[in-house]
Image 1 (cartoon, one colour):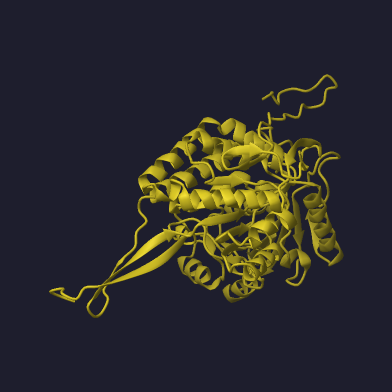
Image 2: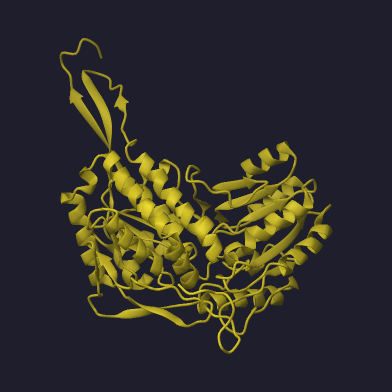
Length: 503
Protein backbone atom coordinates (compact mmCIF):
# COMPACT_ATOMS: atom_id res chain seq x y z
CA UNK A 1 0.00 0.00 0.00
CA UNK A 2 1.39 3.38 -0.97
CA UNK A 3 1.91 6.41 1.25
CA UNK A 4 -0.49 9.31 1.63
CA UNK A 5 2.36 11.69 2.39
CA UNK A 6 3.08 14.59 0.05
CA UNK A 7 1.60 14.88 -3.42
CA UNK A 8 1.88 13.84 -7.03
CA UNK A 9 3.90 15.51 -9.76
CA UNK A 10 1.12 18.06 -10.25
CA UNK A 11 1.25 19.02 -6.59
CA UNK A 12 -2.13 17.45 -5.75
CA UNK A 13 -2.43 15.01 -2.84
CA UNK A 14 -2.00 11.35 -3.73
CA UNK A 15 -5.10 9.20 -3.15
CA UNK A 16 -4.00 5.91 -1.64
CA UNK A 17 -5.72 2.85 -3.11
CA UNK A 18 -5.16 -0.47 -1.33
CA UNK A 19 -4.46 -3.64 -3.27
CA UNK A 20 -7.72 -5.48 -3.97
CA UNK A 21 -7.21 -9.23 -4.05
CA UNK A 22 -10.68 -10.75 -3.91
CA UNK A 23 -13.49 -9.77 -6.25
CA UNK A 24 -15.34 -13.05 -6.90
CA UNK A 25 -18.15 -14.77 -5.04
CA UNK A 26 -17.11 -17.10 -2.23
CA UNK A 27 -19.16 -20.30 -2.36
CA UNK A 28 -18.33 -23.62 -0.73
CA UNK A 29 -14.79 -22.57 0.12
CA UNK A 30 -13.86 -21.29 -3.35
CA UNK A 31 -13.81 -17.93 -5.12
CA UNK A 32 -15.95 -18.26 -8.26
CA UNK A 33 -17.39 -16.08 -10.99
CA UNK A 34 -21.11 -15.33 -11.00
CA UNK A 35 -23.12 -17.88 -12.97
CA UNK A 36 -24.18 -15.09 -15.33
CA UNK A 37 -20.63 -13.80 -15.70
CA UNK A 38 -21.85 -10.35 -14.68
CA UNK A 39 -19.91 -7.91 -12.54
CA UNK A 40 -20.67 -4.56 -10.93
CA UNK A 41 -18.51 -1.60 -9.98
CA UNK A 42 -17.56 -0.61 -6.47
CA UNK A 43 -16.40 3.00 -6.35
CA UNK A 44 -14.08 5.07 -4.20
CA UNK A 45 -16.20 7.79 -2.52
CA UNK A 46 -13.13 10.03 -2.23
CA UNK A 47 -13.04 10.46 -6.00
CA UNK A 48 -15.98 8.61 -7.55
CA UNK A 49 -13.51 6.43 -9.43
CA UNK A 50 -13.98 2.69 -9.88
CA UNK A 51 -12.09 0.63 -7.30
CA UNK A 52 -12.89 -2.82 -8.64
CA UNK A 53 -15.33 -4.92 -10.63
CA UNK A 54 -17.08 -7.40 -8.34
CA UNK A 55 -18.81 -10.62 -9.36
CA UNK A 56 -22.56 -9.95 -9.22
CA UNK A 57 -24.61 -12.65 -7.53
CA UNK A 58 -28.21 -13.26 -8.46
CA UNK A 59 -30.71 -16.04 -7.74
CA UNK A 60 -28.65 -18.79 -9.40
CA UNK A 61 -25.62 -17.96 -7.27
CA UNK A 62 -27.67 -17.69 -4.09
CA UNK A 63 -29.08 -21.14 -4.86
CA UNK A 64 -25.54 -22.54 -5.09
CA UNK A 65 -24.49 -20.80 -1.88
CA UNK A 66 -27.54 -22.05 0.03
CA UNK A 67 -26.97 -25.57 -1.33
CA UNK A 68 -23.37 -25.45 -0.04
CA UNK A 69 -24.49 -24.09 3.33
CA UNK A 70 -27.20 -26.76 3.61
CA UNK A 71 -24.73 -29.54 2.81
CA UNK A 72 -22.28 -28.19 5.38
CA UNK A 73 -25.05 -28.03 7.97
CA UNK A 74 -26.69 -31.39 7.32
CA UNK A 75 -23.57 -33.47 6.68
CA UNK A 76 -20.54 -31.35 7.57
CA UNK A 77 -18.42 -31.07 10.67
CA UNK A 78 -19.30 -27.55 11.87
CA UNK A 79 -22.55 -28.23 13.79
CA UNK A 80 -21.13 -31.57 14.94
CA UNK A 81 -17.96 -30.11 16.42
CA UNK A 82 -17.85 -29.47 20.11
CA UNK A 83 -18.36 -25.85 21.09
CA UNK A 84 -14.72 -25.81 22.13
CA UNK A 85 -13.59 -26.84 18.62
CA UNK A 86 -15.76 -24.17 17.00
CA UNK A 87 -14.34 -21.67 19.46
CA UNK A 88 -10.77 -22.52 18.45
CA UNK A 89 -11.53 -21.98 14.76
CA UNK A 90 -13.28 -18.67 15.46
CA UNK A 91 -10.35 -17.47 17.56
CA UNK A 92 -7.96 -18.47 14.79
CA UNK A 93 -9.96 -16.27 12.42
CA UNK A 94 -9.71 -13.44 14.97
CA UNK A 95 -5.93 -13.94 15.10
CA UNK A 96 -5.71 -13.63 11.32
CA UNK A 97 -7.79 -10.47 11.37
CA UNK A 98 -5.38 -8.90 13.81
CA UNK A 99 -2.47 -9.87 11.58
CA UNK A 100 -4.12 -8.17 8.57
CA UNK A 101 -5.58 -5.15 10.35
CA UNK A 102 -3.84 -2.57 8.13
CA UNK A 103 -5.13 -4.14 4.95
CA UNK A 104 -8.66 -4.62 6.27
CA UNK A 105 -8.93 -1.04 7.53
CA UNK A 106 -7.67 0.22 4.17
CA UNK A 107 -10.30 -1.78 2.28
CA UNK A 108 -13.12 -0.30 4.36
CA UNK A 109 -11.53 3.14 4.09
CA UNK A 110 -11.38 3.08 0.32
CA UNK A 111 -14.72 1.30 -0.17
CA UNK A 112 -16.83 3.20 2.39
CA UNK A 113 -14.95 6.46 2.95
CA UNK A 114 -14.22 5.47 6.57
CA UNK A 115 -11.31 6.93 8.50
CA UNK A 116 -8.27 4.67 8.16
CA UNK A 117 -7.02 5.47 11.65
CA UNK A 118 -10.36 4.66 13.30
CA UNK A 119 -10.58 1.50 11.23
CA UNK A 120 -7.34 0.35 12.81
CA UNK A 121 -8.21 1.33 16.38
CA UNK A 122 -12.02 0.90 16.46
CA UNK A 123 -13.71 -0.93 13.56
CA UNK A 124 -11.45 -3.94 13.06
CA UNK A 125 -10.59 -4.37 16.78
CA UNK A 126 -14.31 -4.19 17.60
CA UNK A 127 -15.05 -6.85 14.99
CA UNK A 128 -12.30 -9.02 16.50
CA UNK A 129 -13.72 -8.49 19.99
CA UNK A 130 -17.19 -9.48 18.76
CA UNK A 131 -15.86 -12.66 17.20
CA UNK A 132 -13.87 -13.60 20.32
CA UNK A 133 -16.87 -12.90 22.57
CA UNK A 134 -19.00 -15.43 20.71
CA UNK A 135 -16.08 -17.84 20.36
CA UNK A 136 -16.07 -17.82 24.15
CA UNK A 137 -19.80 -18.52 24.19
CA UNK A 138 -19.69 -21.47 21.77
CA UNK A 139 -19.13 -24.07 24.51
CA UNK A 140 -21.57 -22.49 26.95
CA UNK A 141 -24.81 -23.15 25.08
CA UNK A 142 -27.05 -25.56 26.96
CA UNK A 143 -30.63 -26.40 27.70
CA UNK A 144 -32.39 -26.85 31.03
CA UNK A 145 -33.60 -29.67 33.22
CA UNK A 146 -37.37 -29.46 33.62
CA UNK A 147 -39.49 -30.36 36.64
CA UNK A 148 -42.20 -32.20 34.70
CA UNK A 149 -45.25 -33.37 36.67
CA UNK A 150 -46.14 -37.03 36.61
CA UNK A 151 -43.98 -40.06 35.89
CA UNK A 152 -41.71 -38.23 33.46
CA UNK A 153 -38.43 -36.44 33.22
CA UNK A 154 -37.88 -33.52 30.92
CA UNK A 155 -35.14 -31.35 29.54
CA UNK A 156 -34.59 -28.87 26.72
CA UNK A 157 -32.02 -28.93 23.94
CA UNK A 158 -30.76 -25.85 22.15
CA UNK A 159 -30.08 -26.76 18.54
CA UNK A 160 -28.72 -24.62 15.70
CA UNK A 161 -31.50 -23.33 13.48
CA UNK A 162 -29.74 -24.25 10.24
CA UNK A 163 -28.85 -22.09 7.24
CA UNK A 164 -28.89 -18.37 8.03
CA UNK A 165 -29.14 -15.63 5.41
CA UNK A 166 -27.38 -12.45 6.48
CA UNK A 167 -27.84 -9.11 4.71
CA UNK A 168 -25.67 -6.26 6.01
CA UNK A 169 -25.36 -2.51 5.33
CA UNK A 170 -22.46 -0.39 4.12
CA UNK A 171 -21.78 1.95 7.03
CA UNK A 172 -19.73 -0.47 9.16
CA UNK A 173 -18.79 -3.27 6.73
CA UNK A 174 -16.47 -5.19 9.04
CA UNK A 175 -18.31 -4.78 12.32
CA UNK A 176 -21.69 -5.62 10.78
CA UNK A 177 -20.24 -8.76 9.18
CA UNK A 178 -19.13 -10.11 12.56
CA UNK A 179 -22.06 -8.71 14.52
CA UNK A 180 -24.24 -11.11 12.53
CA UNK A 181 -22.09 -14.13 11.71
CA UNK A 182 -20.37 -14.52 15.11
CA UNK A 183 -23.38 -15.72 17.16
CA UNK A 184 -24.59 -17.80 14.20
CA UNK A 185 -21.23 -19.58 13.96
CA UNK A 186 -21.09 -20.09 17.73
CA UNK A 187 -24.52 -21.72 17.57
CA UNK A 188 -23.32 -24.16 14.89
CA UNK A 189 -25.18 -22.60 11.96
CA UNK A 190 -23.93 -22.08 8.43
CA UNK A 191 -24.34 -18.70 6.70
CA UNK A 192 -24.87 -17.02 3.36
CA UNK A 193 -23.85 -13.37 3.59
CA UNK A 194 -24.82 -10.62 1.17
CA UNK A 195 -22.69 -7.56 1.90
CA UNK A 196 -23.91 -4.18 0.71
CA UNK A 197 -23.15 -3.61 -2.96
CA UNK A 198 -21.38 -0.38 -2.01
CA UNK A 199 -18.88 -2.15 0.28
CA UNK A 200 -18.17 -5.79 -0.65
CA UNK A 201 -14.37 -5.78 -0.38
CA UNK A 202 -13.73 -6.58 3.28
CA UNK A 203 -16.41 -9.30 3.40
CA UNK A 204 -14.65 -11.18 0.60
CA UNK A 205 -11.34 -10.80 2.42
CA UNK A 206 -12.91 -12.23 5.59
CA UNK A 207 -14.09 -15.23 3.57
CA UNK A 208 -10.48 -15.83 2.53
CA UNK A 209 -9.28 -15.56 6.14
CA UNK A 210 -12.02 -17.95 7.31
CA UNK A 211 -10.70 -20.54 4.88
CA UNK A 212 -7.18 -20.05 6.26
CA UNK A 213 -8.53 -20.38 9.80
CA UNK A 214 -9.84 -23.85 9.04
CA UNK A 215 -13.54 -23.07 9.06
CA UNK A 216 -14.97 -25.85 6.86
CA UNK A 217 -16.11 -25.24 3.30
CA UNK A 218 -19.74 -24.20 3.00
CA UNK A 219 -19.98 -22.77 6.51
CA UNK A 220 -19.38 -19.17 5.35
CA UNK A 221 -20.51 -18.13 1.87
CA UNK A 222 -20.32 -14.52 0.60
CA UNK A 223 -22.46 -13.40 -2.36
CA UNK A 224 -22.09 -9.70 -3.25
CA UNK A 225 -24.96 -8.36 -5.29
CA UNK A 226 -28.01 -6.14 -5.23
CA UNK A 227 -31.02 -6.19 -2.94
CA UNK A 228 -33.75 -6.85 -5.55
CA UNK A 229 -31.82 -9.86 -6.90
CA UNK A 230 -29.38 -11.46 -4.44
CA UNK A 231 -31.06 -10.08 -1.32
CA UNK A 232 -34.52 -11.05 -2.48
CA UNK A 233 -33.32 -14.54 -3.37
CA UNK A 234 -32.02 -15.05 0.18
CA UNK A 235 -35.17 -13.68 1.80
CA UNK A 236 -37.50 -15.86 -0.27
CA UNK A 237 -35.38 -19.01 -0.39
CA UNK A 238 -37.22 -22.13 0.75
CA UNK A 239 -34.06 -23.66 2.20
CA UNK A 240 -32.93 -20.69 4.30
CA UNK A 241 -34.08 -21.13 7.90
CA UNK A 242 -33.54 -17.59 9.22
CA UNK A 243 -32.66 -14.13 7.94
CA UNK A 244 -30.82 -11.44 9.89
CA UNK A 245 -30.95 -7.98 8.31
CA UNK A 246 -29.68 -4.51 9.11
CA UNK A 247 -30.83 -1.68 6.86
CA UNK A 248 -33.83 0.42 5.97
CA UNK A 249 -37.39 -0.07 7.14
CA UNK A 250 -38.59 -0.32 3.54
CA UNK A 251 -36.34 -3.30 2.83
CA UNK A 252 -37.14 -4.79 6.23
CA UNK A 253 -40.81 -4.93 5.22
CA UNK A 254 -39.91 -6.69 1.98
CA UNK A 255 -37.88 -9.28 3.86
CA UNK A 256 -40.76 -9.99 6.25
CA UNK A 257 -43.13 -10.32 3.31
CA UNK A 258 -40.75 -12.68 1.50
CA UNK A 259 -40.45 -14.80 4.63
CA UNK A 260 -44.22 -15.02 4.95
CA UNK A 261 -44.67 -15.93 1.29
CA UNK A 262 -41.95 -18.59 1.34
CA UNK A 263 -41.21 -20.91 4.27
CA UNK A 264 -42.03 -18.63 7.23
CA UNK A 265 -38.35 -18.39 8.11
CA UNK A 266 -37.56 -16.46 11.25
CA UNK A 267 -36.51 -12.85 10.74
CA UNK A 268 -34.56 -10.39 12.88
CA UNK A 269 -34.42 -6.74 11.82
CA UNK A 270 -32.27 -3.83 12.92
CA UNK A 271 -33.70 -0.89 11.02
CA UNK A 272 -33.49 2.88 11.05
CA UNK A 273 -33.20 5.39 13.82
CA UNK A 274 -33.79 9.06 14.58
CA UNK A 275 -32.16 9.12 17.97
CA UNK A 276 -32.66 12.01 20.42
CA UNK A 277 -29.84 13.47 22.49
CA UNK A 278 -31.36 15.30 25.47
CA UNK A 279 -29.19 17.90 27.20
CA UNK A 280 -30.37 19.33 30.52
CA UNK A 281 -29.51 22.69 32.09
CA UNK A 282 -27.15 21.17 34.64
CA UNK A 283 -24.95 19.55 32.00
CA UNK A 284 -21.33 20.51 31.50
CA UNK A 285 -21.70 22.50 28.27
CA UNK A 286 -18.27 21.63 26.90
CA UNK A 287 -18.91 17.92 27.41
CA UNK A 288 -22.38 18.25 25.89
CA UNK A 289 -21.02 19.99 22.81
CA UNK A 290 -18.33 17.36 22.33
CA UNK A 291 -20.76 14.46 22.76
CA UNK A 292 -23.33 16.03 20.43
CA UNK A 293 -20.67 16.58 17.76
CA UNK A 294 -19.51 12.99 18.06
CA UNK A 295 -23.10 11.68 18.08
CA UNK A 296 -23.95 13.12 14.67
CA UNK A 297 -20.70 13.72 12.79
CA UNK A 298 -18.84 10.50 13.67
CA UNK A 299 -18.60 8.28 10.57
CA UNK A 300 -20.08 11.22 8.57
CA UNK A 301 -23.47 10.66 10.20
CA UNK A 302 -23.79 7.24 8.57
CA UNK A 303 -24.72 5.56 11.84
CA UNK A 304 -28.09 3.99 12.63
CA UNK A 305 -27.97 5.41 16.17
CA UNK A 306 -26.67 8.87 15.19
CA UNK A 307 -27.88 11.55 17.62
CA UNK A 308 -29.52 13.58 14.89
CA UNK A 309 -32.19 15.25 17.08
CA UNK A 310 -30.53 17.35 19.77
CA UNK A 311 -32.83 18.74 22.47
CA UNK A 312 -31.28 21.39 24.71
CA UNK A 313 -32.98 22.83 27.81
CA UNK A 314 -33.64 26.54 27.52
CA UNK A 315 -31.27 27.64 30.30
CA UNK A 316 -28.14 26.66 28.35
CA UNK A 317 -29.55 26.63 24.83
CA UNK A 318 -27.98 29.87 23.54
CA UNK A 319 -24.54 29.06 24.93
CA UNK A 320 -24.73 25.53 23.60
CA UNK A 321 -25.66 26.72 20.10
CA UNK A 322 -22.69 29.09 19.92
CA UNK A 323 -20.22 26.43 20.95
CA UNK A 324 -21.81 23.70 18.81
CA UNK A 325 -21.43 25.81 15.67
CA UNK A 326 -17.76 26.43 16.39
CA UNK A 327 -17.21 22.74 17.12
CA UNK A 328 -18.83 21.75 13.82
CA UNK A 329 -16.73 24.23 11.89
CA UNK A 330 -13.59 22.74 13.47
CA UNK A 331 -14.55 19.18 12.45
CA UNK A 332 -12.15 18.63 9.55
CA UNK A 333 -13.56 17.08 6.39
CA UNK A 334 -11.06 15.40 4.09
CA UNK A 335 -9.34 12.27 2.84
CA UNK A 336 -10.11 9.50 5.32
CA UNK A 337 -6.56 8.19 4.91
CA UNK A 338 -5.19 11.45 6.38
CA UNK A 339 -4.73 11.10 10.15
CA UNK A 340 -5.75 14.76 10.65
CA UNK A 341 -9.20 14.17 9.09
CA UNK A 342 -12.30 13.93 11.31
CA UNK A 343 -14.83 13.07 8.61
CA UNK A 344 -14.56 11.45 5.19
CA UNK A 345 -16.97 11.36 2.23
CA UNK A 346 -20.48 9.89 2.16
CA UNK A 347 -20.44 6.33 0.89
CA UNK A 348 -21.58 6.99 -2.69
CA UNK A 349 -23.17 9.49 -5.03
CA UNK A 350 -26.71 8.37 -4.20
CA UNK A 351 -26.23 8.94 -0.47
CA UNK A 352 -24.39 12.22 -1.12
CA UNK A 353 -27.31 13.54 -3.16
CA UNK A 354 -29.86 12.23 -0.63
CA UNK A 355 -28.23 14.17 2.23
CA UNK A 356 -28.08 17.36 0.15
CA UNK A 357 -31.79 17.00 -0.70
CA UNK A 358 -32.63 16.79 3.01
CA UNK A 359 -30.59 19.91 3.65
CA UNK A 360 -32.69 21.69 1.03
CA UNK A 361 -35.84 20.37 2.71
CA UNK A 362 -34.64 21.87 5.99
CA UNK A 363 -34.17 25.26 4.38
CA UNK A 364 -37.49 25.22 2.53
CA UNK A 365 -39.45 24.13 5.63
CA UNK A 366 -38.16 27.11 7.62
CA UNK A 367 -35.34 25.73 9.75
CA UNK A 368 -32.38 28.07 10.27
CA UNK A 369 -29.12 26.86 8.76
CA UNK A 370 -26.39 27.76 11.26
CA UNK A 371 -23.39 26.20 9.53
CA UNK A 372 -22.51 23.84 6.69
CA UNK A 373 -25.17 22.80 4.25
CA UNK A 374 -23.16 22.27 1.07
CA UNK A 375 -20.55 20.01 -0.54
CA UNK A 376 -17.11 20.32 1.02
CA UNK A 377 -15.18 19.52 -2.17
CA UNK A 378 -15.61 19.70 -5.93
CA UNK A 379 -14.59 16.05 -6.21
CA UNK A 380 -15.82 13.07 -4.26
CA UNK A 381 -18.84 12.87 -1.98
CA UNK A 382 -17.84 15.22 0.86
CA UNK A 383 -20.45 17.28 2.75
CA UNK A 384 -19.84 19.95 5.37
CA UNK A 385 -20.96 19.26 8.96
CA UNK A 386 -24.40 20.86 9.05
CA UNK A 387 -26.48 22.28 11.91
CA UNK A 388 -30.08 23.50 11.74
CA UNK A 389 -31.83 25.44 14.51
CA UNK A 390 -35.53 26.38 14.86
CA UNK A 391 -36.46 22.86 13.84
CA UNK A 392 -40.08 21.77 14.33
CA UNK A 393 -41.15 18.21 15.09
CA UNK A 394 -43.08 17.81 11.84
CA UNK A 395 -40.21 18.79 9.55
CA UNK A 396 -38.65 16.12 7.36
CA UNK A 397 -35.23 16.69 8.90
CA UNK A 398 -36.72 15.94 12.33
CA UNK A 399 -38.68 12.86 11.30
CA UNK A 400 -36.73 11.06 8.56
CA UNK A 401 -33.46 9.19 8.95
CA UNK A 402 -31.05 11.24 6.83
CA UNK A 403 -27.96 9.11 7.46
CA UNK A 404 -25.63 12.04 7.04
CA UNK A 405 -23.90 14.85 8.98
CA UNK A 406 -27.02 16.91 9.72
CA UNK A 407 -27.89 17.99 13.27
CA UNK A 408 -31.36 19.29 14.15
CA UNK A 409 -31.36 21.54 17.22
CA UNK A 410 -34.48 22.03 19.34
CA UNK A 411 -35.22 23.73 22.66
CA UNK A 412 -37.28 22.41 25.58
CA UNK A 413 -38.38 23.65 29.02
CA UNK A 414 -39.38 20.74 31.25
CA UNK A 415 -38.48 17.08 31.75
CA UNK A 416 -41.97 16.04 30.64
CA UNK A 417 -41.61 18.05 27.44
CA UNK A 418 -38.23 16.47 26.72
CA UNK A 419 -39.65 12.97 27.11
CA UNK A 420 -42.62 13.76 24.88
CA UNK A 421 -40.41 15.23 22.16
CA UNK A 422 -37.89 12.40 22.35
CA UNK A 423 -40.67 9.85 21.77
CA UNK A 424 -42.18 11.85 18.90
CA UNK A 425 -40.76 9.53 16.24
CA UNK A 426 -41.63 6.25 14.56
CA UNK A 427 -38.17 4.96 15.50
CA UNK A 428 -36.77 3.70 18.78
CA UNK A 429 -33.20 2.55 18.36
CA UNK A 430 -31.19 4.69 20.79
CA UNK A 431 -31.16 7.88 22.87
CA UNK A 432 -28.68 9.96 24.84
CA UNK A 433 -29.13 11.87 28.10
CA UNK A 434 -26.70 14.43 29.49
CA UNK A 435 -27.34 15.53 33.08
CA UNK A 436 -25.73 15.50 36.52
CA UNK A 437 -29.07 14.72 38.17
CA UNK A 438 -29.44 11.00 38.86
CA UNK A 439 -33.21 11.25 39.32
CA UNK A 440 -33.61 12.87 35.90
CA UNK A 441 -31.28 10.32 34.31
CA UNK A 442 -33.25 7.42 35.78
CA UNK A 443 -36.66 8.84 34.95
CA UNK A 444 -35.83 9.76 31.35
CA UNK A 445 -33.94 6.54 30.59
CA UNK A 446 -37.03 4.59 31.66
CA UNK A 447 -39.43 6.85 29.76
CA UNK A 448 -37.73 7.03 26.37
CA UNK A 449 -38.84 4.21 24.11
CA UNK A 450 -35.51 3.09 22.71
CA UNK A 451 -33.47 -0.09 22.80
CA UNK A 452 -30.29 1.60 24.05
CA UNK A 453 -29.99 4.69 26.25
CA UNK A 454 -26.63 6.31 26.94
CA UNK A 455 -26.26 8.55 30.00
CA UNK A 456 -23.40 11.09 29.88
CA UNK A 457 -21.81 9.19 27.01
CA UNK A 458 -22.58 8.15 23.43
CA UNK A 459 -21.67 5.22 21.17
CA UNK A 460 -20.70 3.15 24.23
CA UNK A 461 -21.03 -0.27 22.63
CA UNK A 462 -19.89 -3.62 24.01
CA UNK A 463 -20.51 -7.21 22.88
CA UNK A 464 -22.08 -7.89 26.28
CA UNK A 465 -24.81 -5.24 25.86
CA UNK A 466 -27.84 -6.34 23.77
CA UNK A 467 -28.57 -4.00 20.88
CA UNK A 468 -31.79 -3.52 18.93
CA UNK A 469 -34.82 -1.34 18.49
CA UNK A 470 -38.33 -0.47 19.61
CA UNK A 471 -41.15 0.47 17.25
CA UNK A 472 -40.08 0.74 13.59
CA UNK A 473 -36.42 0.33 14.45
CA UNK A 474 -37.00 -3.40 14.25
CA UNK A 475 -37.02 -6.41 16.53
CA UNK A 476 -34.56 -9.01 17.74
CA UNK A 477 -31.30 -8.24 19.49
CA UNK A 478 -27.68 -8.32 18.40
CA UNK A 479 -24.88 -8.58 20.95
CA UNK A 480 -25.08 -10.27 24.31
CA UNK A 481 -25.86 -13.92 24.91
CA UNK A 482 -29.46 -13.44 23.82
CA UNK A 483 -28.26 -12.84 20.25
CA UNK A 484 -27.37 -16.53 20.02
CA UNK A 485 -31.01 -17.42 20.67
CA UNK A 486 -31.94 -15.99 17.25
CA UNK A 487 -29.94 -18.80 15.69
CA UNK A 488 -31.21 -21.64 17.91
CA UNK A 489 -34.25 -23.85 18.15
CA UNK A 490 -35.42 -25.05 21.57
CA UNK A 491 -36.56 -28.67 21.75
CA UNK A 492 -38.33 -30.23 24.74
CA UNK A 493 -37.58 -33.88 25.39
CA UNK A 494 -39.98 -35.74 27.71
CA UNK A 495 -39.18 -39.30 28.77
CA UNK A 496 -41.36 -41.68 30.74
CA UNK A 497 -39.84 -42.77 34.04
CA UNK A 498 -42.34 -45.31 35.42
CA UNK A 499 -40.22 -46.69 38.23
CA UNK A 500 -38.56 -43.54 39.58
CA UNK A 501 -38.28 -43.42 43.41
CA UNK A 502 -39.43 -39.80 43.26
CA UNK A 503 -41.29 -37.43 40.92
